[in-house]
Length: 337
Image (cartoon, rainbow, N blue to C red):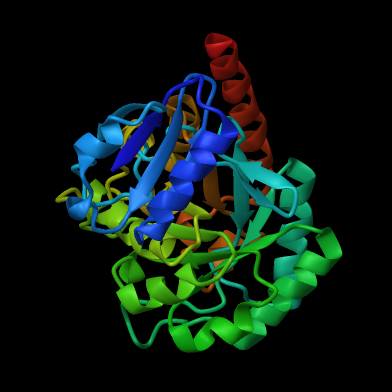
Protein backbone atom coordinates (compact mmCIF):
# COMPACT_ATOMS: atom_id res chain seq x y z
CA UNK A 1 0.00 0.00 0.00
CA UNK A 2 1.17 3.53 -0.73
CA UNK A 3 -0.08 6.74 0.87
CA UNK A 4 0.23 9.89 -1.24
CA UNK A 5 0.91 12.93 0.94
CA UNK A 6 -0.29 16.41 0.04
CA UNK A 7 2.43 18.89 -0.91
CA UNK A 8 1.42 21.30 1.85
CA UNK A 9 1.87 18.72 4.62
CA UNK A 10 4.43 19.75 7.26
CA UNK A 11 7.30 17.59 8.46
CA UNK A 12 5.66 17.31 11.88
CA UNK A 13 2.40 16.06 10.35
CA UNK A 14 4.24 13.47 8.26
CA UNK A 15 6.26 12.38 11.30
CA UNK A 16 3.08 11.99 13.38
CA UNK A 17 1.45 9.84 10.69
CA UNK A 18 4.62 7.78 10.28
CA UNK A 19 4.85 7.14 14.01
CA UNK A 20 1.21 6.08 14.13
CA UNK A 21 1.67 3.63 11.25
CA UNK A 22 4.84 2.09 12.69
CA UNK A 23 2.97 1.77 15.98
CA UNK A 24 0.45 -0.34 14.09
CA UNK A 25 3.25 -2.73 13.17
CA UNK A 26 3.90 -1.62 9.58
CA UNK A 27 7.29 -1.15 8.00
CA UNK A 28 7.62 2.21 6.25
CA UNK A 29 9.46 3.46 3.19
CA UNK A 30 9.56 7.22 2.74
CA UNK A 31 10.05 8.70 -0.73
CA UNK A 32 10.05 12.46 -1.30
CA UNK A 33 10.16 13.66 -4.90
CA UNK A 34 9.63 16.97 -6.64
CA UNK A 35 6.00 16.22 -7.44
CA UNK A 36 4.89 13.87 -4.67
CA UNK A 37 5.69 12.49 -1.25
CA UNK A 38 4.91 8.82 -0.72
CA UNK A 39 4.72 6.62 2.36
CA UNK A 40 5.00 2.95 1.40
CA UNK A 41 3.63 0.42 3.87
CA UNK A 42 5.06 -3.08 4.26
CA UNK A 43 3.06 -5.67 6.16
CA UNK A 44 -0.50 -6.98 6.32
CA UNK A 45 -2.30 -3.85 5.11
CA UNK A 46 -5.63 -5.69 4.84
CA UNK A 47 -6.31 -4.79 8.49
CA UNK A 48 -5.78 -1.07 7.89
CA UNK A 49 -8.88 1.09 7.39
CA UNK A 50 -8.16 2.81 4.07
CA UNK A 51 -11.08 5.21 4.43
CA UNK A 52 -9.77 6.35 7.81
CA UNK A 53 -6.32 7.07 6.39
CA UNK A 54 -7.74 8.71 3.27
CA UNK A 55 -9.80 11.06 5.44
CA UNK A 56 -6.71 12.56 7.10
CA UNK A 57 -6.03 16.18 6.15
CA UNK A 58 -2.51 15.54 4.85
CA UNK A 59 -3.43 12.51 2.73
CA UNK A 60 -4.05 12.98 -1.00
CA UNK A 61 -4.89 9.35 -1.77
CA UNK A 62 -4.29 5.75 -0.71
CA UNK A 63 -3.55 2.98 -3.20
CA UNK A 64 -3.06 -0.74 -2.80
CA UNK A 65 -0.19 -2.32 -4.74
CA UNK A 66 -1.46 -5.39 -6.55
CA UNK A 67 1.95 -6.81 -7.50
CA UNK A 68 3.43 -9.27 -4.97
CA UNK A 69 6.75 -7.39 -4.89
CA UNK A 70 6.56 -4.23 -2.79
CA UNK A 71 10.04 -2.95 -1.96
CA UNK A 72 11.23 -3.42 -5.55
CA UNK A 73 8.11 -1.80 -7.01
CA UNK A 74 8.38 1.60 -8.71
CA UNK A 75 4.91 2.50 -7.40
CA UNK A 76 6.40 2.12 -3.93
CA UNK A 77 9.57 4.07 -4.79
CA UNK A 78 9.00 6.36 -7.82
CA UNK A 79 12.56 7.71 -8.01
CA UNK A 80 15.42 5.63 -9.42
CA UNK A 81 17.61 3.98 -6.81
CA UNK A 82 21.22 5.16 -7.01
CA UNK A 83 23.82 2.82 -5.52
CA UNK A 84 27.28 4.06 -4.55
CA UNK A 85 30.07 1.48 -4.83
CA UNK A 86 33.32 2.90 -3.48
CA UNK A 87 32.57 6.22 -5.16
CA UNK A 88 31.21 4.71 -8.39
CA UNK A 89 27.48 5.24 -8.85
CA UNK A 90 24.90 3.24 -10.77
CA UNK A 91 21.27 4.13 -11.45
CA UNK A 92 19.50 7.45 -11.84
CA UNK A 93 21.51 8.37 -14.93
CA UNK A 94 24.82 6.94 -13.68
CA UNK A 95 26.28 4.24 -15.98
CA UNK A 96 28.64 1.58 -14.63
CA UNK A 97 30.96 -0.63 -16.69
CA UNK A 98 32.20 -3.86 -15.13
CA UNK A 99 34.91 -5.85 -16.92
CA UNK A 100 37.24 -8.76 -16.29
CA UNK A 101 37.77 -12.47 -16.91
CA UNK A 102 35.18 -15.18 -16.42
CA UNK A 103 37.55 -16.92 -14.01
CA UNK A 104 40.52 -15.82 -11.96
CA UNK A 105 43.42 -18.03 -13.10
CA UNK A 106 46.68 -16.52 -11.87
CA UNK A 107 47.86 -13.36 -10.15
CA UNK A 108 49.59 -12.24 -13.34
CA UNK A 109 46.44 -12.78 -15.40
CA UNK A 110 43.96 -10.98 -13.12
CA UNK A 111 46.30 -8.06 -12.42
CA UNK A 112 47.13 -7.56 -16.09
CA UNK A 113 43.44 -7.59 -17.07
CA UNK A 114 42.62 -5.24 -14.18
CA UNK A 115 45.26 -2.74 -15.31
CA UNK A 116 44.10 -2.88 -18.91
CA UNK A 117 40.37 -2.49 -18.28
CA UNK A 118 40.99 0.33 -15.81
CA UNK A 119 43.09 2.15 -18.42
CA UNK A 120 40.15 1.79 -20.82
CA UNK A 121 37.72 3.32 -18.34
CA UNK A 122 36.10 0.35 -16.60
CA UNK A 123 34.55 1.21 -13.23
CA UNK A 124 34.77 -2.22 -11.62
CA UNK A 125 36.64 -5.51 -11.97
CA UNK A 126 34.79 -8.80 -12.32
CA UNK A 127 36.30 -12.25 -11.92
CA UNK A 128 35.00 -15.66 -10.92
CA UNK A 129 36.52 -17.39 -7.89
CA UNK A 130 33.72 -19.91 -7.32
CA UNK A 131 32.43 -21.19 -10.66
CA UNK A 132 29.14 -23.09 -11.05
CA UNK A 133 29.69 -25.35 -14.06
CA UNK A 134 27.34 -27.74 -15.83
CA UNK A 135 30.00 -30.45 -15.89
CA UNK A 136 31.58 -31.64 -12.63
CA UNK A 137 34.83 -32.14 -14.59
CA UNK A 138 35.09 -28.53 -15.78
CA UNK A 139 37.26 -25.94 -14.07
CA UNK A 140 35.45 -24.92 -10.88
CA UNK A 141 37.53 -21.84 -10.06
CA UNK A 142 40.34 -21.19 -7.57
CA UNK A 143 37.82 -20.60 -4.74
CA UNK A 144 39.38 -18.84 -1.72
CA UNK A 145 42.66 -18.36 -3.59
CA UNK A 146 40.71 -16.66 -6.37
CA UNK A 147 39.22 -14.22 -3.86
CA UNK A 148 42.71 -13.47 -2.55
CA UNK A 149 43.98 -12.74 -6.06
CA UNK A 150 41.01 -10.44 -6.72
CA UNK A 151 41.97 -8.52 -3.58
CA UNK A 152 45.53 -8.24 -4.88
CA UNK A 153 44.24 -6.77 -8.16
CA UNK A 154 41.93 -4.44 -6.25
CA UNK A 155 44.81 -3.18 -4.12
CA UNK A 156 47.02 -2.63 -7.17
CA UNK A 157 44.46 -0.84 -9.36
CA UNK A 158 41.90 0.57 -6.94
CA UNK A 159 39.06 -1.05 -8.86
CA UNK A 160 36.19 -2.35 -6.72
CA UNK A 161 35.51 -6.06 -7.32
CA UNK A 162 32.39 -8.10 -8.08
CA UNK A 163 32.39 -11.87 -7.86
CA UNK A 164 29.86 -14.67 -7.52
CA UNK A 165 28.83 -16.46 -4.36
CA UNK A 166 27.42 -19.99 -4.52
CA UNK A 167 26.60 -20.91 -0.93
CA UNK A 168 25.85 -19.28 2.43
CA UNK A 169 28.91 -20.95 3.94
CA UNK A 170 31.15 -18.83 1.69
CA UNK A 171 29.95 -15.49 3.08
CA UNK A 172 32.79 -15.01 5.62
CA UNK A 173 35.26 -15.04 2.69
CA UNK A 174 33.52 -12.13 0.94
CA UNK A 175 34.50 -9.33 3.33
CA UNK A 176 36.76 -7.63 0.74
CA UNK A 177 34.26 -8.07 -2.11
CA UNK A 178 32.49 -4.82 -3.03
CA UNK A 179 29.54 -6.34 -4.90
CA UNK A 180 28.34 -9.91 -4.36
CA UNK A 181 26.96 -11.55 -7.49
CA UNK A 182 24.12 -14.07 -7.35
CA UNK A 183 24.25 -16.16 -10.50
CA UNK A 184 21.35 -17.34 -12.64
CA UNK A 185 21.34 -20.78 -11.03
CA UNK A 186 20.99 -19.26 -7.55
CA UNK A 187 18.38 -16.64 -8.40
CA UNK A 188 15.79 -18.63 -6.44
CA UNK A 189 18.09 -19.89 -3.69
CA UNK A 190 15.85 -18.19 -1.16
CA UNK A 191 17.88 -19.07 1.93
CA UNK A 192 20.94 -17.46 0.34
CA UNK A 193 18.90 -14.41 -0.65
CA UNK A 194 17.65 -14.03 2.93
CA UNK A 195 21.21 -14.04 4.23
CA UNK A 196 22.27 -11.45 1.66
CA UNK A 197 19.31 -9.34 2.76
CA UNK A 198 20.93 -8.97 6.18
CA UNK A 199 24.09 -7.47 4.66
CA UNK A 200 24.61 -3.82 3.84
CA UNK A 201 26.51 -4.52 0.66
CA UNK A 202 25.38 -4.24 -3.00
CA UNK A 203 24.05 -7.43 -4.57
CA UNK A 204 24.14 -8.08 -8.33
CA UNK A 205 21.20 -10.40 -9.01
CA UNK A 206 21.18 -12.25 -12.33
CA UNK A 207 17.96 -13.39 -13.99
CA UNK A 208 17.50 -17.15 -14.17
CA UNK A 209 17.58 -18.90 -17.53
CA UNK A 210 13.81 -19.49 -17.49
CA UNK A 211 12.68 -16.81 -15.04
CA UNK A 212 9.95 -14.26 -15.70
CA UNK A 213 10.39 -10.59 -14.86
CA UNK A 214 8.10 -11.02 -11.86
CA UNK A 215 10.13 -13.97 -10.59
CA UNK A 216 13.32 -11.90 -10.84
CA UNK A 217 11.70 -9.05 -8.93
CA UNK A 218 10.40 -11.44 -6.29
CA UNK A 219 13.96 -12.69 -5.79
CA UNK A 220 15.07 -9.08 -5.38
CA UNK A 221 12.22 -8.71 -2.88
CA UNK A 222 13.71 -11.48 -0.73
CA UNK A 223 16.92 -9.46 -0.41
CA UNK A 224 15.18 -6.14 0.13
CA UNK A 225 12.74 -7.56 2.70
CA UNK A 226 15.75 -8.23 4.91
CA UNK A 227 16.70 -4.55 4.81
CA UNK A 228 19.30 -4.56 2.03
CA UNK A 229 17.99 -2.22 -0.66
CA UNK A 230 21.21 -2.18 -2.71
CA UNK A 231 20.15 -4.58 -5.46
CA UNK A 232 21.27 -4.43 -9.09
CA UNK A 233 19.23 -6.45 -11.59
CA UNK A 234 21.09 -8.20 -14.39
CA UNK A 235 19.71 -9.61 -17.65
CA UNK A 236 22.10 -12.34 -18.80
CA UNK A 237 20.01 -14.10 -21.42
CA UNK A 238 17.20 -16.62 -21.21
CA UNK A 239 16.89 -20.09 -22.70
CA UNK A 240 15.39 -20.39 -26.19
CA UNK A 241 15.41 -22.87 -29.08
CA UNK A 242 18.13 -21.11 -31.11
CA UNK A 243 21.56 -22.73 -30.83
CA UNK A 244 23.67 -20.16 -32.71
CA UNK A 245 23.96 -18.07 -29.54
CA UNK A 246 24.49 -19.38 -26.02
CA UNK A 247 21.24 -17.80 -24.79
CA UNK A 248 18.67 -15.28 -26.01
CA UNK A 249 19.46 -11.75 -24.88
CA UNK A 250 16.14 -10.23 -23.81
CA UNK A 251 16.87 -6.54 -24.32
CA UNK A 252 13.29 -5.57 -23.57
CA UNK A 253 14.22 -6.43 -19.98
CA UNK A 254 15.71 -2.94 -19.75
CA UNK A 255 12.55 -0.86 -20.37
CA UNK A 256 10.25 -3.43 -18.73
CA UNK A 257 12.24 -3.73 -15.50
CA UNK A 258 12.81 0.02 -15.33
CA UNK A 259 9.05 0.53 -15.69
CA UNK A 260 8.19 -2.02 -13.01
CA UNK A 261 11.05 -1.27 -10.61
CA UNK A 262 13.29 1.54 -9.40
CA UNK A 263 16.35 -0.72 -9.17
CA UNK A 264 19.33 -0.34 -11.56
CA UNK A 265 19.33 -2.71 -14.54
CA UNK A 266 22.48 -3.95 -16.28
CA UNK A 267 23.13 -6.26 -19.23
CA UNK A 268 25.57 -9.17 -19.55
CA UNK A 269 26.26 -9.44 -23.31
CA UNK A 270 28.95 -12.09 -22.79
CA UNK A 271 26.89 -14.86 -21.20
CA UNK A 272 23.79 -14.03 -23.20
CA UNK A 273 25.43 -14.38 -26.62
CA UNK A 274 28.36 -16.68 -25.83
CA UNK A 275 30.23 -15.14 -28.77
CA UNK A 276 32.89 -12.44 -28.61
CA UNK A 277 31.87 -11.04 -32.00
CA UNK A 278 28.36 -10.29 -30.69
CA UNK A 279 29.40 -8.62 -27.44
CA UNK A 280 30.03 -5.19 -28.98
CA UNK A 281 26.75 -4.78 -30.92
CA UNK A 282 24.69 -6.05 -27.98
CA UNK A 283 26.55 -3.78 -25.57
CA UNK A 284 25.82 -0.76 -27.73
CA UNK A 285 22.18 -1.80 -28.10
CA UNK A 286 21.88 -2.14 -24.31
CA UNK A 287 23.37 1.31 -23.75
CA UNK A 288 20.96 2.79 -26.32
CA UNK A 289 18.03 0.98 -24.68
CA UNK A 290 18.69 2.75 -21.38
CA UNK A 291 20.59 0.14 -19.37
CA UNK A 292 22.35 1.39 -16.26
CA UNK A 293 25.48 -0.62 -16.94
CA UNK A 294 27.24 -3.57 -18.55
CA UNK A 295 29.21 -6.54 -17.23
CA UNK A 296 31.65 -7.72 -19.91
CA UNK A 297 34.13 -10.58 -19.94
CA UNK A 298 37.68 -9.58 -20.84
CA UNK A 299 40.67 -11.95 -20.94
CA UNK A 300 44.27 -11.20 -21.88
CA UNK A 301 44.45 -14.47 -23.88
CA UNK A 302 40.94 -15.76 -24.66
CA UNK A 303 42.22 -18.70 -26.71
CA UNK A 304 43.85 -20.15 -23.59
CA UNK A 305 41.19 -19.16 -21.05
CA UNK A 306 40.19 -21.88 -18.60
CA UNK A 307 36.55 -20.81 -18.84
CA UNK A 308 34.35 -19.18 -21.53
CA UNK A 309 37.16 -17.96 -23.78
CA UNK A 310 34.84 -17.86 -26.82
CA UNK A 311 32.78 -15.04 -25.33
CA UNK A 312 35.67 -13.01 -23.91
CA UNK A 313 37.02 -9.83 -25.47
CA UNK A 314 40.70 -9.03 -25.61
CA UNK A 315 41.78 -5.89 -23.73
CA UNK A 316 42.25 -4.09 -27.05
CA UNK A 317 38.74 -5.03 -28.20
CA UNK A 318 37.32 -3.85 -24.88
CA UNK A 319 39.16 -0.55 -25.23
CA UNK A 320 37.55 0.06 -28.63
CA UNK A 321 34.14 -0.95 -27.32
CA UNK A 322 34.38 1.30 -24.26
CA UNK A 323 34.96 4.33 -26.49
CA UNK A 324 31.93 3.36 -28.60
CA UNK A 325 29.78 2.89 -25.50
CA UNK A 326 30.71 6.38 -24.29
CA UNK A 327 29.69 7.79 -27.66
CA UNK A 328 26.29 6.07 -27.50
CA UNK A 329 25.74 7.32 -23.96
CA UNK A 330 26.60 10.88 -24.98
CA UNK A 331 24.10 10.62 -27.82
CA UNK A 332 21.26 9.21 -25.69
CA UNK A 333 21.83 11.84 -23.02
CA UNK A 334 21.59 14.57 -25.62
CA UNK A 335 18.16 13.22 -26.61
CA UNK A 336 16.89 13.38 -23.03
CA UNK A 337 18.41 16.80 -22.29
